[in-house]
Image (tube, rainbow, N blue to C red; front, side):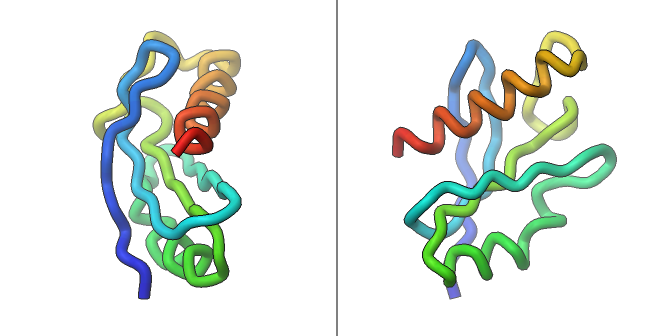
Length: 89
């Protein structure tokens, strides 16, 4: 079983908490309010075991990730920032 690791990535001027597991092609898992990364804990491990680098981010201004506003543009830029930060590992 793959371990779920937690860390903070800095990208596009924000600090974002992520939970991740595995190595390989990147899979970014997203959630909505009031869920958290914990909703994806089983999928993180299953994807890691299948050969993927699975990442679940803290979304929608919950937990440790703070955005300046909650517009669709901001949410899209956060998704791209997560992909960018995690794909450079």
